[in-house]
Image (cartoon, rainbow, N blue to C red):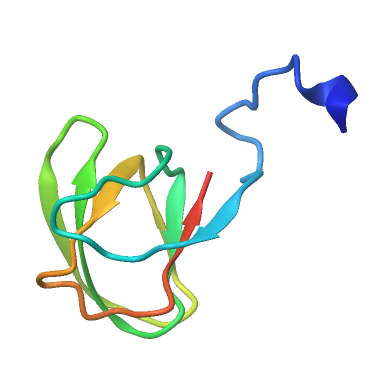
Length: 86
């Protein structure tokens, strides 16, 4: 795969990373997401790339919340088994 490291992934390409999220009220993710996979239904309170706080309510299991997020807050996040997609 090293031969592809010189290329930038386009915004329409599928995610190349999938990392489990540990929600935190103070620590940002290691990278900006392209979306968050919801494993178990609930709410997600997240911080966007431009540092807007937003709470997304009643997300169903299996849903992919599309967006550029840098943090998922522990407080007010009830959805579980979250996976950051990038």
